[in-house]
Image (cartoon, rainbow, N blue to C red; front, top):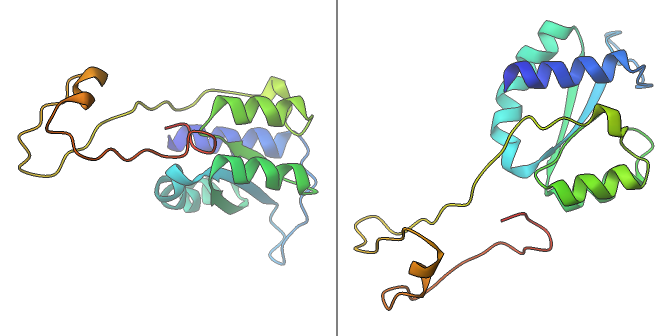
Length: 145
């Protein structure tokens, strides 16, 4: 992940981003990152910035929110999306260079049950078992979960 963040920042820097130079003279890169990556991005950003000699400014939010911000913003250097459909939308609107697109992470859905639960969920059909009383899901129109 660290190498990929550094690579993304380097690609943005080499692509001639027009970010204004902060007072310390270093180039500032604006990184739009999915909310699910907030902790990882905050942990990796200082080292990546130091290694690249740039300042990283993180904007972490839901991918749908970021897509709207990118569309409305006058700049942005890196977009780390949690959803292919939203990335497709931003690319289609000409806000991301399709040649710069890379898949750097993936995830999978999991089912979490309370500690000590007797429930054994091995597949989707098990969610209809009599012991399952509640099921919480993210809004599929906004979150790829």
